[in-house]
Amino acid sequence: MHQLRSAVYKTGILTAVACVVLLCSHAQTKYLLNYRFTDTADVSTAMGLKKEFDDKNLCSQYIFELPALLQKKGFIAASVDTVTMDSAQAMVVLYLGKPWRWAKLTTSSVPTELLNAAGYRDRNYTKQALDYAAIQQLQVKILDKLENTGYPFANVYLDSFAIQDGDVTAVLKVDKGPEYKVDSIRVFGDVKISNRFLQRYLEISDGSIYQKQKLLTISSRLLQLPYLYEEQKWNMTYLGTGSIVNLYLKERKSSQVNGLVGFLPATDEAGRNKLLVTGDFNLNLKNGFGLGEALTMQFQQIQVQSPRLQLGYQQPFLFGSPFGVDVSFDGLKKDSSFLNINMQIGVLYAFGGNRSAKIFYQQFISNLLTVDTIAVRNSKRLPDQIDQTTSNIGLEYEWYNTDYRFNPRKGFDVKFTGSAGIRKIRANNNITSLKDPLNPVFNYQALYDSVGTRAYTFRLKASVARYFKTGKQTTFKTAINAGMVQSPRIFRNELYQIGGFRLLRGFDEESIFASAYAVLTTEYRILLGLNSFLYAFADGGLVRNNSQFANTNSQLFGAGFGMAFETKAGIFNIAFAAGKRNDLPFNLRQSKIHFGYVNFF
Image (cartoon, rainbow, N blue to C red; front, side):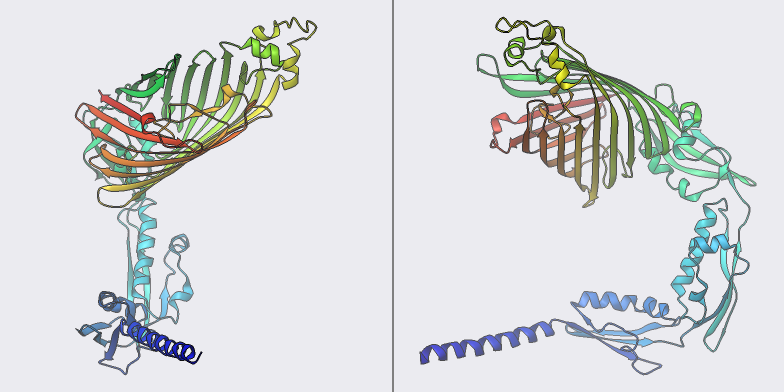
């Protein structure tokens, strides 16, 4: 027992000594800064100047910033005389000079709206330390306000500047100069583009007030248009009281024909393995009439016996107004199960070059192609798919601030769509005409009475993407895509169909039926050019299906890598992806390979 106590005692002493050594070593790691003043006693403590730093580099940076810090405290003439540094500490010799204080800043000649816009407060310039940076910032804010309200040659300055015993008086003056308007936008180059379209898109209409902030966004906004580019940077021609914006634009090949071919492992009816070839062909005509319009046609054969045809036309800024039209058609034949037709017409409204909203009317028609009449007759209940017609009114909002829309380095991309409507169920003759030999009095028409022929339906869909610039040629993307459909009864042929190259990679195209889903995406890109990049990704999703006779929840995960490579003729795409479901492991033999090519003309 005595030996045990002795051992514990020795251990305690050693622990205490070790703690003291660690504390001392920690204290010694601090880099010290000492002060000496040439014209006054040491006031570093009273002024709250830092004296300890984690390393020598941080101390050097602080010494470099000292003059600005002291000037902010009213010592306008402050300067660093000498600096000596060794491995453990530094000595800085400072000249402070006399502190300056505001006695009065007269602003009576400056319009109140300019002072308010600049955040001016009279108390900050009366019996307060003169902050040189603050008065400069005040002048800059007033100048910015003037340059964005029609005065490109305005001047803001201090007049009658006087100092008496360190008290400063001055008069803030503004010389607006002549008011300017933008008379017109002038385009040089071979591009075919409507001048009214450019005025609306750039938010610089003929006769509008000169606004510097909008002018500075010209190049970034033009970069978002796929059918033109700036041959040289825009400039201004200034006249007496007006100006002309000169744009130097060249046509860029943007209309496209592309094809996407995929190879998927599959099994035939006999259970034999085979390779399924899928296709996606797209015709996209942009700005053919010089009005910024887009005409699209897409044909897909992604799954067996499931062709899809999509047509669309979009015309922004109709007749030079902020309104536009958007018309679309989407027809899908799902093997031998059903045929869905989705028609939509909408009115667009552009808030600016990167924000828009749309109000639309949508009609969704679904017709069953085959019915398992034996199952219906025996179970005496309707199938999980049903003939229906749904009329919806909806709203769509889109906003982005990415630096380049088609291959962003940084910024946000947000899109939200919501709709509400009435669904009408149509009786299927193959069901209503059924007769049960064992129960001949049973009326199969009555099955429709149990579900109701009219019901409300809500649909929501949202996507949010954020791009982080992580290096000179790298970016990191995070995104979430979510959707839900709500109705008293939900049928299989009105569910979302997700999965595949566009959403939740690593799974068969549109093979996952969902009444609600949320998919989180992370993607790392190595940028090779304006439209070229290598990438690796991971997609994780939660999917719910609570449609008729179904109530399932699934967790899905997909990962892979790919490449988009731009050539003179177009863009070549290739991607490899593998996916797993919560109840199934990864199976590389079920991985997906997608090839794509976009040809511009």
